[in-house]
Length: 284
Image (cartoon, rainbow, N blue to C red; front, side, top):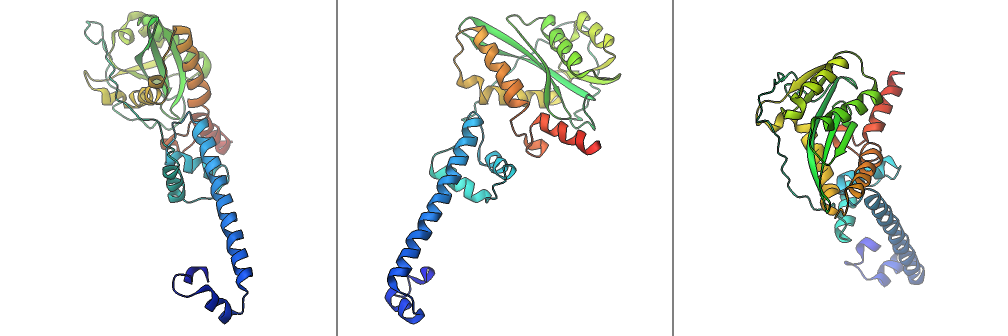
């Protein structure tokens, strides 16, 4: 009857079907209330997921999160609800990273050759540097990403961009993951990664060094993508008064949110930590 209200009078349909008008209107009101309650519940779930993602998730990740939580819902329904209530991912901005490759230090060959999908953890790590502005001055960040799960396995912050910055990140990654012999460590050809001290550390950890071709950011695209995510989802939306404030925010974003919570599209919408855990359980 509800579908045909535009074509036939309600009174006529009730008479033909022997249904009371009062009963029909009561049902329609109850049906509308149940529908509104379901829509409100979905909206609250979307708002909660959006908030927990630091307002970084758009409809694709929120849709995947809802499915993972056991809420079967259509992707188009999620998109319509978010659009109706003005829920959207943070606006992204472009950024540029500069590399000090104007030096005469030895450079390793590009052994990675853009093979960004290793078969297991601790097979290929990639690293790069970027910078963060605070009211106290610049803060420089070095990260090391395991390309298998895109997990940040090592990182370091300092107010100067020296070889010790990358050496510190490497030490953290090594003692955290304890990789075997022959891990491929890839970076650009910045002077920090070409320094004698850093190359000695790689040799001590029995790692092979690989470096990008000159002026070719695509050779290290995965770490560039990580920095893009970090800056557009968190750093560009902050106004750091001190380096310590920036350090705490980056620690929380990397170790709590990115590694353990943020859904990664290339990992089947799983976090890096969950992706590795699921693989380990399957193997076991």
